[in-house]
Image (cartoon, rainbow, N blue to C red; front, side):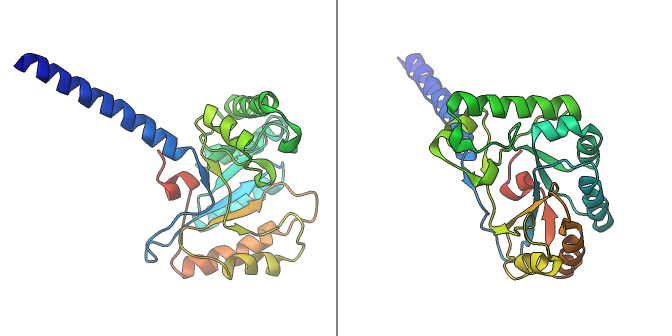
Length: 231
């Protein structure tokens, strides 16, 4: 009887362990806009969407290196394949790379099968070019619908949005882009910028205003996974 009870107790612990694993995994697959931190732990995440771009991405990488800053780049798979040197430069510099779909389509126009194909194709493109598997997903235009969340969960992707939108893809004034960050910054912020803009991007100029100011204020730039405690 005693042996039977010991076996039952061991089985109970094993079941609890399995349940804990799935609970942790499920908790990671959610929608993240920022993270609550101790105000004295001044960590923030700088993110770039839509790249890589053959010129702009490299210019941004140079600025980040100058200030010793790590960032997270949400790449479009098609752009990674079209501009492999820029994509590989992001990986070689030690920045984090996330999935931003293969073609940056309006996700509302896709059914679940179409969205899964977009996620899978982007994952494969990034891996084939950069040799890394993206562990995060940012939906184009922040479209975190129920369909998007279901598809992201199939890949175990946390869905990463943002708490500060610089609108650098449309704003052509570096001062305004910088002010949108400096006026709204707080520990745990996730900042949205772009390393692929049609033309006349002011993102590099804005970065040169943002980075030294926030570093002077004691902020530490980390990847999204580091900010959220993944990995």
